[in-house]
Amino acid sequence: DSGVTQTPKHLITATGQRVTLRCSPRSGDLSVYWYQQSLDQGLQFLIQYYNGEERAKGNILERFSAQQFPDLHSELNLSSLELGDSALYFCASSVGGLNTEAFFGQGTRLTVV
Amino acid sequence: TQLLEQSPQFLSIQEGENLTVYCNSSSVFSSLQWYRQEPGEGPVLLVTVVTGGEVKKLKRLTFQFGDARKDSSLHITAAQPGDTGLYLCARAPGSNTGKLIFGQGTTLQVKP
Image (cartoon, rainbow over all chains, first blue to last red; front, side, top):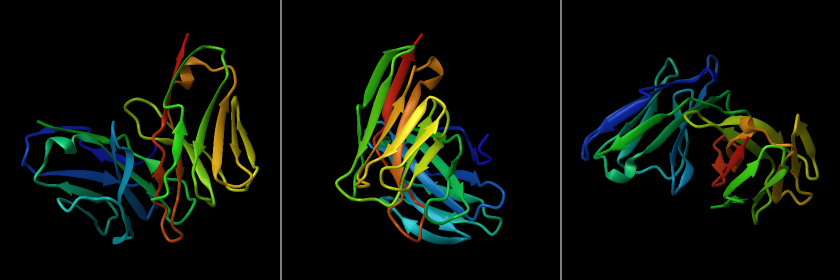
């Protein structure tokens, strides 16, 4: 158990819909990262929050947004969903900074039909 | 984008065999991490290598960081079915963030 909790584990939704994925980081970790894993693109960094503020951004689509709340949990919002958004979405947390170990949750498997 | 190229992409071997997985980049990086991911789980950190030429051992796994810090390898001795999984190398490109850039991964299947 990594200590990072993601909900839900599985999500099936229709094209055009909006979903929210939730992540609770390890106790004490200030950084939360979101990654997308698909068969063709591999594991891709989406966005990082550190203590409530956006720290780094990857190839995150404009239809996607995230936030980190005062209790440090984070949510990833995906809207106007397309078939190609079907993927595993992972949240990871760390104390922050370079070379610190990232602990990954079990992921949310999103299927868009 | 400073890519990490992993090879091979897929590897299917018999229990007891040895194997090596490679991670290469055209750029120098300050450190490199290796992760293993099992089906239905998130990646788990195996090791971080920092110094050029560094060798780290984790039981039957040996990790090496190239002298020029552009490449790394993971060698598994006497592979076991429990080694089956996706092996990912990753680097942190920035100084003010712990975000990771991952290679495409090597899927290893060890048959009993």
